[in-house]
Length: 614
Ligand SMILES: Nc1ncnc2c1ncn2[C@@H]1O[C@H](COP(=O)(O)OP(=O)(O)OP(=O)(O)O)[C@@H](O)[C@H]1O
Image (cartoon, rainbow, N blue to C red):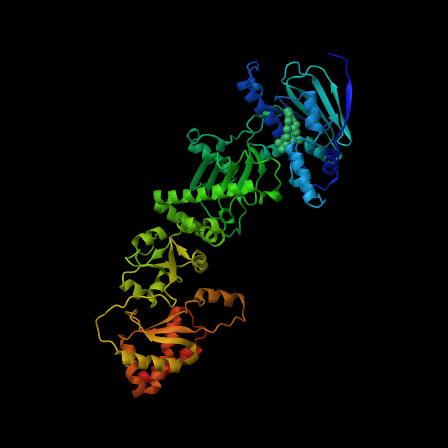
């Protein structure tokens, strides 16, 4: 061994500034130091693997490639050793004393942008090697580079102004870091503490991590493996362990891509919807990794909000390890991930739905609200999501569902719109006067029966270039249809409409004779730009002073016996005719879900019954 000389160095000004912050700021998340040091060790051993393939003289490192951790409670130290490439003297100076590398630069940049108020920033930001000084008041780095004739070196610093480097006795290749824990961090010398940190942040690191001789990271990073190499059992175990789930996933997506961004992902769709089971809004269940190292267990913006029910792992080698949670959401990389992943997941649902429609229907029943939320909030995926909707229609059997794609495929020649009606359930919709005209013409009507459907249809607007049209609203033109049976003459119809319009006055905007009705005498149509009954109910529930003059258009059925009788009795017994006119309007409003106050209706019914029995 050559004569020991100690070189003293002063940290670059920025590093001093950074260390000052690391040590003195009120950080919340000291825990990350171990993640940072383990990732450095793992990166360094990845380099060894690479050298094995490229350097002729590099001898096979074999089983050596592992990270060991030892704790000494007495001495209050944690020692972390790796068998990576190590660092030469120049590299120690360059890497651990200057600000040449990306992580620290980005950190300082962020700090500037945050207007010099760094409290809180550090906890959210990986500051690489320097995070060691969050928990230690002295750090020693023993290092021997893989390069020929590498020196055996010891780097030491108290994280204040500078560091020293000296030569020491023979070392194995790699780096050994000794953290001398500061007073407030001595509990990190406890085995259980370190073990839980490894399990949380570094469970999937690709090299064995040994804690006092025992391997901690047992779970393989399945998402980086080839699908064909993973068994069903392994997937299940991973889902239950890594996603902390107890049920069976319904669907699974194991997806990798290199362009436009590196992605390795393993996504599971759970069997039950916790929001439906009364657990309130759940947090996102997909964690973000960079090369097996956890970046964020609940990354904001990685997936659209509506996909918060899926669970799993996304790993992108393109992400910087120390991306801050605050900037994450705005990061172009995360946006790209979001874009690619959400499209992929939707495609997966589409594929699964056509492969096994019954299974999808059961799944859909539990999770439909998420898709609907997506349609209303995720503009980019709106159209793709619309294909995932399922509903009953006038042409499906009760309990059977179909999709918009099915609907469009069945549209009649010349049909331009997609007809729908929102109601409470199939029976309620079918017992009303609206569907009959469409059924009679062979036009299919979608039955939307979920309370939020009104908003969904509103947000969707159209599908496949065809407008969605509510059959409760005026403005849906139907062809005339000649029907059997005597009808009132045009003149009689006009007379009756005038009578009704003057009787009902303010309450109606228009009365006309139509050919749409088959069984019912009268129908109330909401004006084309008018509020639907569901929205109106909602507004009323939210605001007790909400006032809305309901003015409907009435369409009468000139073939219906009641209408024909009314046309006669308006002159023969005007008293009764007036009562019947008012009652017809109320009946139409009840069918439309628009009658607010039934007191008059009941009184009138009583009078009519009295008359009927006279
Ligand atoms: N265990 C190690 N073995 C070999 N080199 C190391 C080790 N730890 C750190 N280094 C070197 O020191 C450099 C600085 O490490 P630091 O953790 O501060 O930032 P970084 O890992 O480069 O940042 P980023 O996260 O942006 O990649 C590393 O790039 C690496 O070259």
